[in-house]
Image (cartoon, rainbow over all chains, first blue to last red):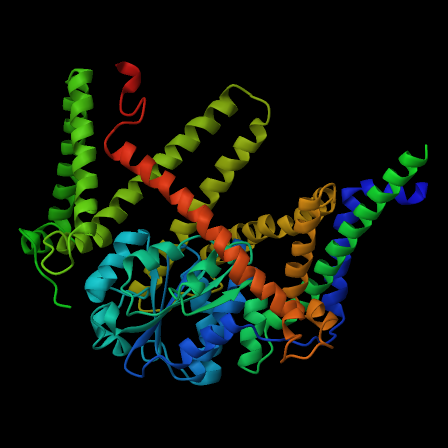
Amino acid sequence: MEWLVRFQQIDRRIIYALVILSIVVALLWPFDLPQPVTPEVEKFYRAVEEVPEDKIVLVAADWGAGTRGENRPQTEATIRHLFLRKKKFAIMGFDLQGPQFAQALAEKWAKEYGAEYGKDWCNWGYQPVVDAFLISLVQNIPKAVPRDIQGTPIEQIPMMQGVKNIYDVGLVAEFTGAGLLQSYLRRLPREVPIVQGCTAIIGPEQYTYLDAGQIKGLLVGMRGAAEYEKLLNTRGEGRNAMRPQSLTHLLMIGLILLGNLALWAQRRSLRRR
Amino acid sequence: MEEQPGFLQEWFAEHLFVPLQGWAFWAALLGTVVLYFGLLVVLQALPPALRRKLTVALTFLAGLIYAVEFFWPEQGNPLTGYITPLGAKFLPVMFSFTIGLGIISLAMVHGRNILRRRPGWGNSVAFFVAMLLTLGAGFWNLASQRAAEAAGASPSPLAFPRVLWRLCEEGLLFALDSTMFSVLAFFIVSAAYRAFRVRSVEAGLMMFTAFIIMLGQVPVGMILTSWLPSEGPLAWLRLERLSNWILTGINAAAIRAILFGAMMGYLAIALRTWLSLERGAYFGAED
């Protein structure tokens, strides 16, 4: 039993090496995994489907390079869904890098879906002040966002014709790794549905808003993106990431069990002495 | 919803929040700087007690606008009209000043480190190199893009300033940002292995719940209970269902309680700051 006790103190470098190994193996070995869909992701999907034809969708890319592993596949799947259903959308973000990343995603998929900048989507760019900007959106969008990222006056963008205030927005899809949702809930009227894609670490906090009906759908972490891709019948970054994530979760559980087994062995040997 | 123009709001919109060109821009810029330093001189000349009273009064008035605007019913609220110019035009300008303040503060701290050869002063040199390189590359790229546009040509993606900027932004900033977060995965696995030891019933319960959530978040975990029927009385035992129930039920209730408590504290702190009741607020050391 003494050999088992040693597993209480595995060197952290060995643990890091095992994590790298599990990720590399899962990336190199493309085994297939089933992908069930949770109710919150189905709700997100339905909310996008139900956006009225005469309203635009606001894609709020409130994320940066730090959380792009989780937020990018979520944003990408949503943009693909919007292009697929010919829903017009505007990109914006309270993170400096978010609108830039979302623009790259929209440009990437626009060619495949035959979408055109200005006609099918536009980019309002980075907005520095959260609450005050959201209040401005409620009152008057062209005043709050005078120009897009290319410097074109908002009134001259074809898809923005007739978009006056937040009531012309059929859905706000917010993607974030930070707690910005409360500002949207506080400042936007209840008539405007909100859906969110968040990182797994802040996911547990967001379920309260889903439960209260304040948000209409939720994508949590890469799993949320993978489930959304499943609903769209595509395979992207989210579903591919489920392999390394699955193996790493199994590794973590295995290590925890091993540590506890070692603890039990130590207690048993102490009792015998 | 029709916008209700407030008192002097249209005048502000026409005269105060408009872009200026040429001599008017430079005159406004110079006037603002003179006014700003003039106010600083006047404030410095005031006795500390009066200065404190003035700051307290201005803080109260600034907070009052937001509080009254929020609680006043939407219909006929005269303050709401000011939020657009305040939010979309004025506050971004104020935030821009904080960038300058941040740079000055960082430069002072790291400058002192280098001048006094404090331990780790090499890191301070790296800070200056990184900041100046990124600033230089950013402005050079912008100038080169504008020059190309002025000449009627589209900016080349292979132009040296563009390549240098992309190296700084995509090659360094984005990559380092992602790396910082990715490293967390390694720490979490290591910390979970060390921390999750069943030494009590509560710890055992927590570990059991964590296992359900961890397995319920990934497809491989769901395979474990995929033999159970997806409908019927035993369906709730499937890991993805159990995990979802814990997150939307038990977790949501606990988080709601935590948030409620935190927000009450937040409200108390906000009130104390607004009413300048915090100890040491605004020149407290001078009193």
